[in-house]
Image (cartoon, rainbow, N blue to C red; front, top):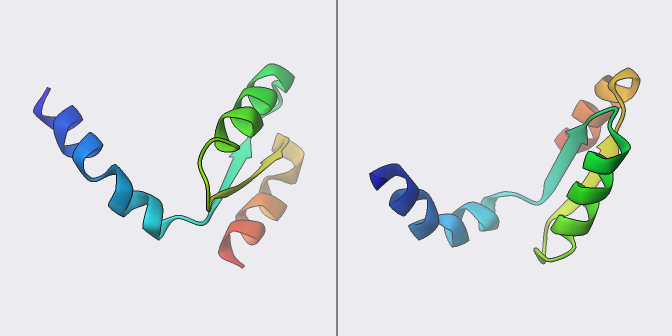
Amino acid sequence: MQDLKFSAGNFKDLLKKIDKVAVITNSSWFKNLAETSFKLIPGIELKAYNFKESKAAKEWVKI
């Protein structure tokens, strides 16, 4: 439970350090869930890729 408190307490600081998230999945429902969820978090851009595109996903996050 202590870990959960620590994570929730530092969530704002963590969001300041993340500007891109790449989700790699072949599941269409998970892709849709991730894309919809991240619309609720301002300042973070999310792109979903399938497994064949994992190299492109890693490169996009680095940019």
